[in-house]
Length: 185
Image 1 (tube, rainbow, N blue to C red):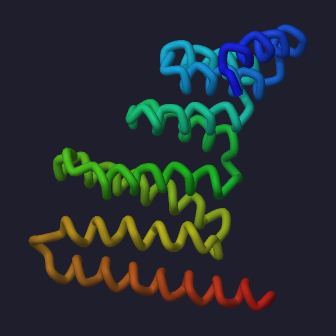
Image 2: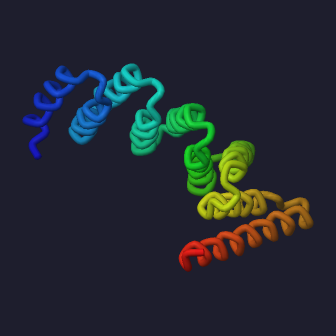
Image 3: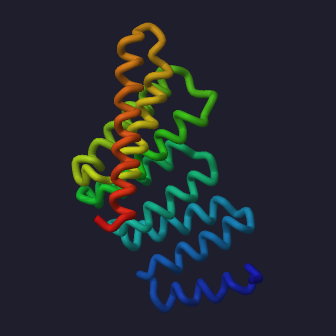
């Protein structure tokens, strides 16, 4: 539990197996918990250097950048993961969820930025749904992104209604699929 005692142990483990990224993640966490953010980021980047094609490296980087509030770096990490796993719907879904979260929660975004994030989120979620049309969570997030888009559509009432209708249909489909999955069908 004592980071000062854990650090040398993890460093020794890294010497014994320099290709095990879990050790880099562990040391990065020790540094992050101690407030040494530059060292934590450097350790995660060393993990990326060791295994640049390992998706977990980019997930760890994304989590770190999310905790630091560095959205651009977070998005770069999850997009790199999606590039490594182009046939994994969850990788594209993850990109979309981060765009949704930023567009929904960041009140400092201007309308242009928010529209761009929604557009990028929809592009990513559509890739996930193209790989798995019954991906309940992806259907849900597509609806959430459409609701943000609808809220920004103040000049075209018909378009706003169409977006909200599509979001509602997606929600209903997600609920029906979830019930079907729960019943084992």
